[in-house]
Image (cartoon, rainbow, N blue to C red; front, side, top):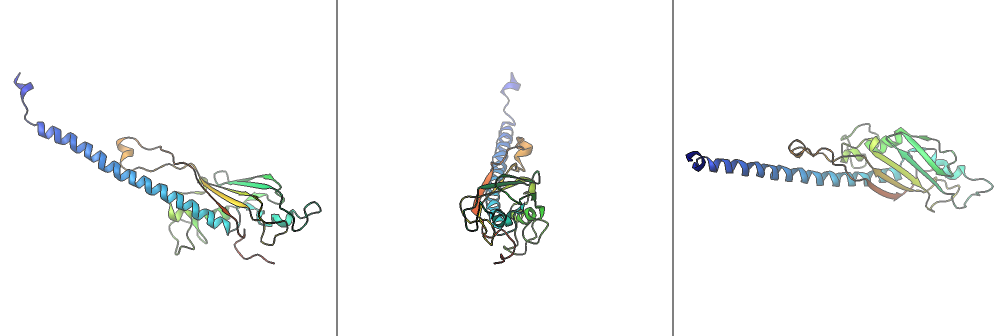
Length: 213
C-alpha cells in the first residue's frame, strides 16, 4: 500500500526520538553530577560537625563533668576512667547511656544546634566566617533529626581530669535522600536514600570555654 511505503516525515520522527534520548542523557548527567556534589557536601558536613563537637559543650548534659563525678573510693583521682558510651539522637532529642554515666542525665538542644547551625547561629547559610560555620552551612538540608552523636570512652583521659573526659566522638548523618531535579519527574528518582555518613574524632575539651584548673 502507498501509505505503508510513504517515507515523508521519517527524518522528523527519527530526530524527535533522538532528541528525547539526548535530553534524558544530558539532563540525567547533570542530575548525577549534582548527586556527587550532595555526597561530597554531606561528607564534609559530617567532618565539620565532629570537629565542632570535639571543642564544644556536649549534647549529653553533664558529660563534661563526668571525670570528676566518678571520683570516689573505688575510682580515685588519676585512675583510668570507667567505660561509658552515650548516644544522642537528634530525631528523638534524647541521650541513652551505657556503662558508668554519673550525672549524665539529659539532652542539650542548644549544643546540638551549635553543631548543626554553627557557633552563635540559629539558622543555615548565615556564617560570616569558617569559624562560625555549621553543618548546614555546607549542606543546607541537614537538620538535627538527621544527626546522631556518640561519646565513647576509649582509654583516653583519667578520673578527675579538669577538662572533663576525653571520649571518642562519632558523628553520624542518617535518613537523608539524594535530591534529583530532572530525573525525579522523568523516571521518578525520588527516594534514593543516602548511605549513613560517619566520622570519629577524639574530644579535646568538652566545653565552649577553657577549663578551670
